[in-house]
Image 1 (cartoon, one colour):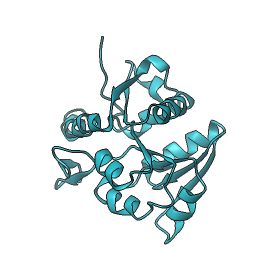
Image 2: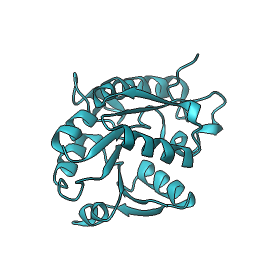
Image 3: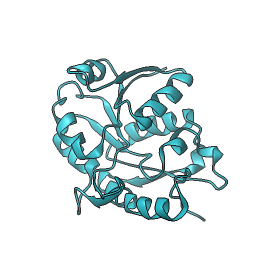
Length: 198
């Protein structure tokens, strides 16, 4: 059992929190109530950023002390929204939200994952007819191993998880969000994930 704080109680955060609690972890969900994120992060070993990516950097940078020596699992994508509310452009072109978070939080071990799929797939990867891929980006091998184990608790088989390397590789997976609006407009809002076929 691990103590986990989920920052963000929307569809992504709520889905992850429920699945991790079912897997036996002690999970706290922080909403937008003043002080809730700090209280949750202060006592957690792992913190999951499921806040809207456009505001994530400011929110989490304010928690620098609370996030010291923790693993921060970043599942968000920082984009501007188009007229239909779907992602339009990257906020950090040539970089990534994960890189910005790691720079702002040097004593936190940031790991990027689960940001290349619609939220139902994060906790039910086996429901897709084809094997999905969960990517890992981060500087700390031990932190990535911990996150890998967390993913297995969510139903990810080890061969479905690909470690891309350092935190800079997150700019590639974050850019993949630009596929999403086109896929949704083309085929509808059915669960899907970006996958590597071999």
